[in-house]
Image (cartoon, rainbow, N blue to C red; front, top):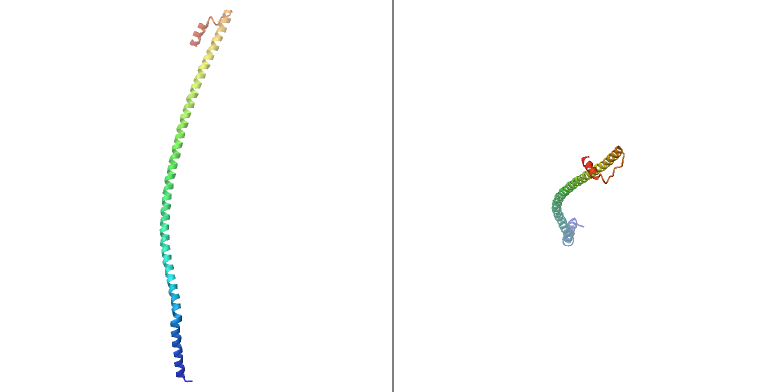
Length: 156
């Protein structure tokens, strides 16, 4: 066989192969590659969009956290103020109750002192009557000398 014919025949077969590849093989491959490139572009776009949304969500979260911190600080301050007011009120009530108890104790002590004085006066009067009775060696009638005893009590 002739080398020129072989080369020519090979060139025709190669041209048919190129035409067949360009007509039937290459379009599906380019279509798949284009689809793949589009999917990658869409994925990158979605990633950028998600990254932007994440940044916005982080900003909202930070704002909410700051708001929560401020609200918590306000509530803590309010609770401390209420606690201090309750403590002050309890102290005032305790002081008032203490003063009332002291006044009642003083009044009771005064009454007991007066009662003790009266009892002591009665005992001194009885002793004076007994002493006078023994000095006079006769019995003294208490009902007759009640006025005398009353004066003696007031003088004591």
